[in-house]
Length: 267
Image 1 (cartoon, rainbow, N blue to C red):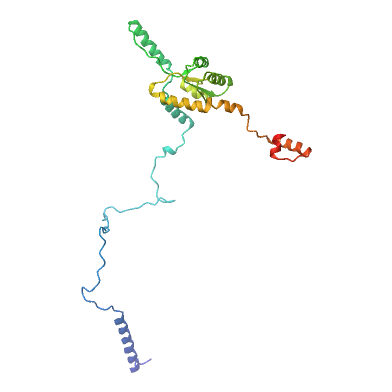
Image 2: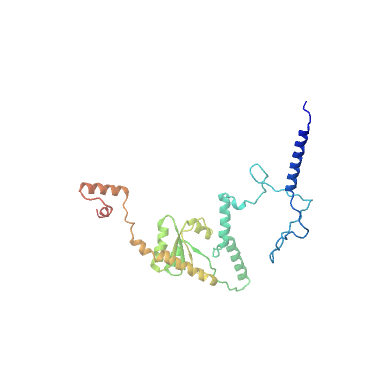
């Protein structure tokens, strides 16, 4: 057993004195009241940030829409849906019928008009009826209007037989009547309540539609009537096919001539 001696007591006192001196060094110096520096004042117009008070009754629960997390809410995806073709055709047909102004009268409308006219004639009433304005159709009828120069604009489809397309266009060029060629005779048939139509024409329009008709006529003349002679004089682009080019190369090689793209055109 070790005995606690006087040397041990001296060592313990030295250790306690060293620890107490370290504690005194770590303490900050005492400052007088009112001597601490105040923080700089906020600039003029700067508002202090106010924290929103939270209601303890309603706890915020943010959602995480990551993979395998919260389920997303339902959204309206109607405009992203690719509808079936028959649905799109139905909607396009409705819109097209709303835009058409000069469609011929249907069978029911014609029957109602004739019934009203007959009733007025039976009662000896004379009613002033204006000439109906609608699209004319029928190949023979349109050709007669073109020859009489009564058609304002002729619309012909790009289809077979070619005679049905060439006859109105040839007559229009000869008589100076503007014409256009569109795709599909079924689209023209929709205008006149038929499955197909060989050609349709506008004769007269309402006064408020005169400006639009003039715009269409100018575009038709610029793209069809005026360009006919220019396109008729150009026969292809002057480019030979692969077989013709190879044949001319062999012919030039046999004749001992130099083979270039410029010389191929002269052979």
